[in-house]
Length: 96
Image 1 (cartoon, helix red, strand yellow):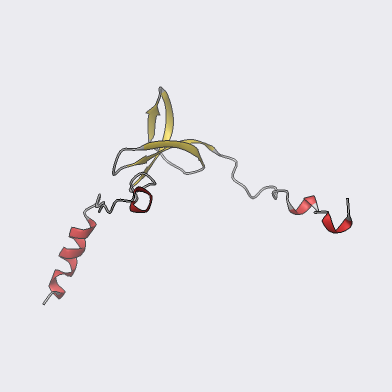
Image 2 (cartoon, helix red, strand yellow; image 1 turned 90 degrees about the horizontal axis):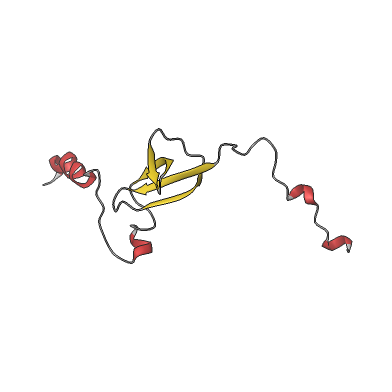
């Protein structure tokens, strides 16, 4: 191996003690369309969801890849918390 082609492996290895140890399978649920997907995460949650007979920690999301207009190609307004109505009510006094 030529000296100029060598890469010092110590720079490629992950540093010890700075990465989370609590990776586990977590269920992420899109609340706008009830889509659920499983992936590894360290996200903290108190809720659980049963998927295929197995109970997983649950993280709820307002929007995901299955409902976001960029990924779906559809222009859909998702207003799960009534934020638009709250905004209009709050700023109606400034309307002329």
